[in-house]
Structure formats: C-alpha cells, structure tokens
Image 1 (cartoon, rainbow, N blue to C red):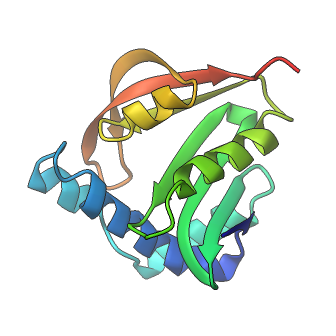
Image 2: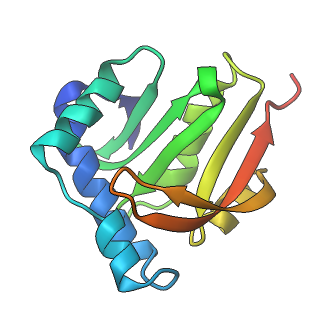
Length: 160
C-alpha cells in the first residue's frame, strides 16, 4: 500500500470511496434517510468541488492505494486546524485508515498545533485510539442540508 497526494483525476474515485465507506461502516449508527443524504455518489458538481479541494494549496488531500486501486482518502485544512475527512472502503489489507491518519497528521502538524474533526459515531473509537479527545456532541451539517450527529474531537500536535 502507498499513500500519495491526490491528483485531480482522483476526484471521482474519492467520491466512490466516500459512498462505499459510509454504506459499509455507518449503517449500524445512522438511519436510512441520514445515510441516503450522506452517501451521495459522484455527480458533476461534487466531482468539480472535489477537484477544487485537491488543487487548493490550503488543503492536504491524500489517497491510499494498493496495486493502483484507491482504497481510502484523507483531507485536512491546517490553516483552519481541521481534519475534514478520512474514509476507507472495505478492503482486505487492513490498517489503511491508521496509515492515512498518520501521514495526514505528520503533514498537518507541520503547519498547525491542533487538529479538530467532527467524527461520525462509527468513527469515534478509531479517533480515540489515535489520541483524539472528545470535546462535544455536535450536528455536522452537510452541503445537502443533512444533519449528522457527530462527536467533535481534537488532538494536539505531539511534543517533539
């Protein structure tokens, strides 16, 4: 498995990974209307928005792949101290999310001293296991208007 910076031509694959990960991993934590509003597949508008994020120097966008197949992605905006996204589709490799998070943190913590994320309920234990602390229960509002119950979590840059 390798982790690399995303390219604009990864945008559609990133959106498919997003959808597959939500449907596979969040179904036990959220109702069907929430999942349907969250797990939207690629549309021309969403692909263009994803390409803009990939091209924006404020964003760190990473892709994990094996044998040329994208398995997961992670996005951070260090200037806002935000870990925006980390999604991994079902795969036989394992620890893809941990590897993505590690690389994303290494890059982001060069530019900021703390990362905050709105962790979905199914992902909260993953973030806890990687040193994130719970701050509050929040509703994350998607661009579609769907509200997703989440946990606001944060992690300080490790001491050097």
